[in-house]
Length: 378
Image (tube, rainbow, N blue to C red; front, side):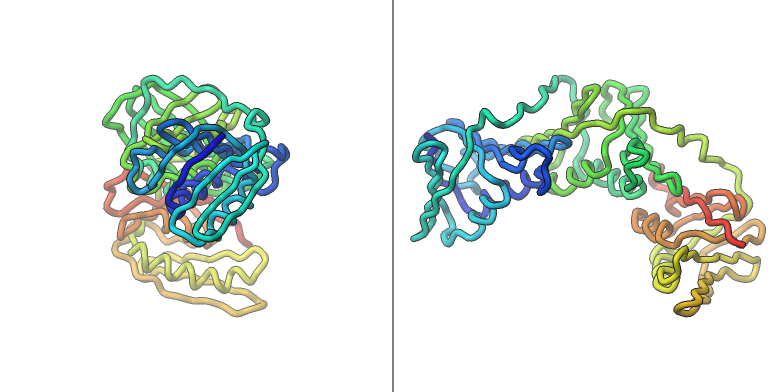
């Protein structure tokens, strides 16, 4: 019969992180619960939606947790309901006691609440992973790679493989992450300090965004383990499992070329502001696009929306070379591409009005390239 006391806000934080793996609409009803396992020296919270699973460990040794365990055990509780109850409790700490048949009494200050739980045997077992020879990455670096690529993955389930980020390790240390929705692409490469076994996997971009939310910046490193069907990201207290996408990722390398006709370098923030203004007008039109005109004397952006109005704006460039060019594109793609850049300047290379154009950080400190397909206009 479970019995422990814990700091309320610390418990709530751990519950909310675990809840990120729990969907509000579950095909398997039992997955709307959170599993609480109480051991002699720690508590493990587990949440899953079948696609991702999170195990969050709270050790007695963590001083901030204020955790005192009297008696071990395990129970399932309806996640949303339980978390709402915990957040409403009046005192800084709470006592959690199982009385009988998975009934839980929560005591905090003068408040006492009884909840009905469920038997843990009803909960599906998490798939076991072999945890040897991990790839160790700095959490900040992995989160940075995710923010540079995941946004370019597709949101359409018609081609499931494109909803993921393709991560490849070759020669034990050459890492590449790439995402595309077939209209744009974002690719980041780097040489890792630590070597690891080669891999080739496609991780759902949704799972990677959840990873970034769960692994806070105070977690310095993360261990990565992978099997044919899933990947595990693990820190001292959090284990984050996600299923991999099945299928072959398209060969994106063939999209990249070193030949170009026109090259312009802009201030990243200034170009983004100009595109956001253009977007406001273009968004009011069904297939809103921005037309970029590059001549030897000037660079300008134009939007013409019959319903709303028009934008004509002259753009400042830091440098430009090559031929004159007029090209149309979806401004959202350029805005999101610029958001992913950390560099103060951006170098954009154009081949022709109908071929994809590339963006790279102007400072070239990162091996980071993005590609946007233009829109054909009359």
